[in-house]
Amino acid sequence: MSSTTHSTERRGELYGSDVVRSYGDAAAEYEALRNDAGVVMREDRVVLRAHGRDPVKMLHGLVTNDVAGLTPGQATYAALLTPKGRMLAEMRILRRDDDLLLDVDAGAVEGVLAHMKKFVPPLFARFEQAEFAVVGVYGLRAYDLLRSVLDGPQSSLAEDEAATGAFDGDVAYITGTGWTGGPGADVFVPAHRAEALRDALHEKGARLCGHAALDVLRIEAGVPRWGAELDETTIPLEADLGRRAISTTKGCYTGQEVIIRILHRGHVNWHLRGLLLGDAPVPAKGTVLTRPGEDRTVARVTSACMSPRFDQTIALAYVRREIEPPAQLVLTESAKNAQVVTLPFTG
Image 1 (cartoon, rainbow, N blue to C red):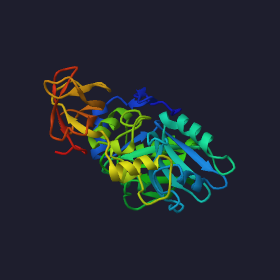
Image 2: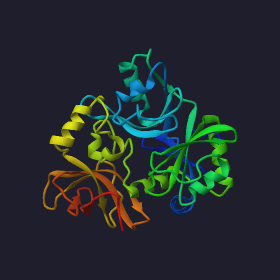
Image 3: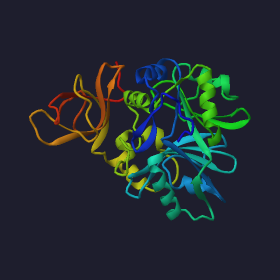
Image 4: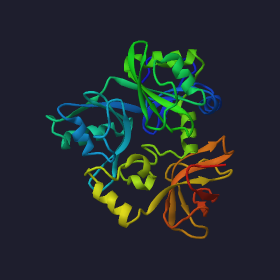
């Protein structure tokens, strides 16, 4: 949590985390995050540190993506699974010279630490909270403003691509992100310097933005997040995380047998889809949908918003595999129609 409170700051809970929801004008914040530049304190993310005799080998054997192939300064995105292929967390992993940084949703941290304590011998790797915080910068001018306050990359970064820089003499790790569907970066800085970085970006023209506007952009981009689309019941392939989070060439990892079986000989029963809802009220998480004239649940809303970009209510939802876009469904709570679409939303 930020120790400095701005006069227009509005705090609240979002997906289990206490965050700044807005600075008084969510519409202007949305516009900045999409078309100009906005800075967000990512209080919903926690940075963990893995260190010891061989943290790379230990983590490589636990997560879905290739960690052993990273060189210092590189990053990847991965899932941590149970033996049954269900998710315990999603994370960005940044390799340094002697350790690893793990960027994890705050709601998953306790489970991650418990899992590591149970399955990783402390002689080989120990996991603990790092003295880093994440500051997000998003919008068309995001990298221009980053270059004005950081010694770092001179060009934009692809999603999960990383670069090492410095902020006023302190190390800063910059990672590309697709969280909003547009340009953006998440910057790992020493926690005691996070507010100074935010303020420096604000002084250069970035608007202070909250998580309410950021979440609208996330939903518009069709990006799943922990606490909404992702939880302990999710198989990552249901959320279409295969391309980004799963290596099909690395060695064994926990849950691999389930993932390989699905990829080569099976299927998942649910797929993350988008819903176009017209003028329907924004549905709550868990709202169910049926086929017209039927009672069987064939879809369930995970997150939703009123979309400025599409000028209607939209939602992310898990939809039964036999329901193909552009099928028409019905929201049971409002009897409003919903059109199923593939992600990301377009138009």
